[in-house]
Image (cartoon, rainbow, N blue to C red):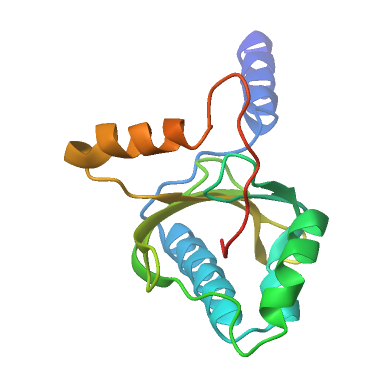
Length: 183
C-alpha cells in the first residue's frame, strides 16, 4: 500500500512539474487571444493610415524587426522609426487594407506567441502579403516582434519579374539596398 501511495505521489509531482499545458485552438481563451492579436494588427495598420507615429510604433516590441519589399530593407525598430519618420510627418504614412488575416496562437499556455499572415491591399502596389510574429508581453498586450512585407506575384508572371529584378542588379552574391519607397 505504501509503495502504491508513493508511486501515486511521484506521478502526481511529475505531472504537476511537466511544464506548460497545450492550448486547444478552439477554447474560449484562445478565441479571446486571437481576437486581441487581430485587433492589435488592425490598430497598427490604422495608425499608419492616420499618420500616428506613436500609436504605430507602440504596437511593436522594442526589439522588433521589419522586413520591407527590397532586399536591403531589414530594419530594427530604431532604424525603421528613423526611416519612417518623414512618412508619418504627413497626414498618412502608408495605407494597407487588410483583405484577409490569419492568426495562429502558440500551442503552449500561457500563450505568448502568435503567427500571422495577411493579404493586404495597397493603392500603389496592389495585393501584398504581410507575415509576422506577435509576442504577448507581460502587460498582456500583443506586440509585433517581426513583420515582413512582400509583393504577391502571379506564378505566370514570376519568371518575367525575376528577369527584371536580375536586370536591376539584384543578385545572390551582392544584393543592392534600395528602400526608395514606402513599405
